[in-house]
Amino acid sequence: MDGARRSGQNRRAMPEIASRRLRWTFAATLAAGLPPAPAAAQAPSEVAEVRFLDLVEREWRWRLAEFPLLATAAGVHDHDDRLADESLAAYDRRDRESAGFLAELARIDREALPPGRRVDFDIFRTQLEERREAHRFGEHLLPLNADSGFHTSFALLPRQVPLSTPEQYDAYVARLRALPRAIDENVELLAEGLRRGVTLPRATLDGIESTIRPLAEVAPERHPLFEPFGRFPATFAAETRERLSHAGRAAIADGVLPAYRRFLGFMAERYLPATRTSLAATALPDGEAYYRFLIRRFTTLDRDAEEIHRLGLEEVARIRAEMARVITKTGFEGSFAEFLDHLRSDPRFYPASAEELLREAAWIAKRMDGKLPSLFGRLPRQPYGIQPVPEALAPKYTAGRYSGSPRESTEPGWYWVNTHALDRRPLYNLPALTLHEAVPGHHLQGALAEEQEGVLPFRRYSYISAFGEGWGLYSEWLGVEAGMYEDPHDEFGFLTYQAWRACRLVVDTGVHAFGWDRRRAIDYLAANTALSLHEVETEIDRYISWPGQALSYYVGYLELRRLRALAEARLGERFDVRAFHDQVLAEGSVPLPVLAGRIEAWIARPADAASSSPEPR
Image (cartoon, rainbow, N blue to C red; front, top):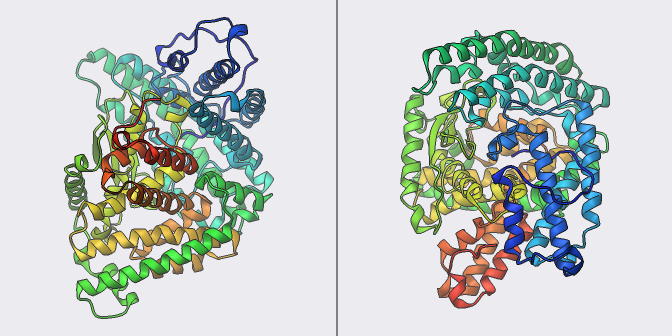
């Protein structure tokens, strides 16, 4: 989700809100039971809550103005013709204004707030603090990683905006015209990173040009950004179609393509030759503190690298024992390494065509759809579809990913399956991948989060990795409960995915804290999972270029498993798995300590309440 960075305003009385979509402030105030009395007559708790909601509302409107694509996704259309200012000056300004928001927040008495608002307060403060810390470490000077970046995100613009009316198409064309400026600003961020010594490791950038050339060296009509002009709504008049197509083609030909070509030249001539030869985040300026910050941000816990590394080693060893049991079930005779080689080399484990891979993914997803009512009391309204990973992204992209659609879009959520290099896309991993990315994983969790009405927008549209990725990995484990791994090879694929995420704890900390080189990381992941060797390399490059993020999966998963076991032990026969899952997902992404407190409170509720739906805020 969008990172948090926005501008501030002077303190003032709560203004009137023009957009109905922002009336949550008034609804929240009324829900809290605040009387329409003068401020002087209000209790300290009421004053504190009004001041807090006022600050949150102003910062949220500032957030929407600073990041127009976030506003579009949130259904606020005041900035639909704009893209964010990505200049160095804008980042510095946002940092100063974020400091102002933090200073104002510090003047509000947290202890005077109702308990639920204290959770909001803590998450809001963390967002502001992390925004400032990321700026201090120069994270904005790294707007890409090994498999994607600002350039590929911009190419996905048609998927991020509603395109149903001529006015929405006009706004889209305006954004296309703004795109060259945004690309050039990101190039300047990378150039500033070179000057400060804040760059990506050179070892992870091999082949990065393959993700830029399809966006820089193509006819305007074949550019991914031109795609909406080939699918106008049937109601558009011929002259409207012609006008918009001409405007879109001109924006791409005259501005977008030259900007992408400038970026390609910059990467080849200036950036790649000058990037650092070191791998570790700790090799960056103030790197020790930066990596500790990343651990805290992505796990929401105050853990050190040594503790996480040790946990990963223990879990990999445990999962290897389970893998050995499953190998016996397959009837294979040979060593663990020989079994991995068998899986990687036998053609029967790989699709013969992209269509076969997509059909198999669709069948798995549909089977899981039928099991959802037995596992969840509340299901989202938004459906999902299955698509191949966009061609421009596929060569260096992961095996699959979930791509959400804006709340008001006519598009579903999309489960992307990578159909590039089919001989490296094993079918035995596909059930676990599908459960993680589609249902009951990212689509179900993300769609439910967007439909929450009682959660403040700054939380609804934020993504906390330890929660979201922990849920994705927990969803793979739910496949065991739902009987989704019927074949021993699929079961081994599930365990491979478990081991893969446990290996991340070892590899991420190994590279960024303990001096591992790229070859050692590749060899460790290849020796402990049945991932294809191509995917092993792309994954290792991802961890090197995106430090800390890989830790969120297994840490979040273990906490969800711990809370599930706690609820089952405490509630006994009263445990209802549907109610448990509804409680976990009730407030969208939350830090792991907040989730633990919520589940423990639910467990302690009276018997008639513990199995019911989540209480409204």
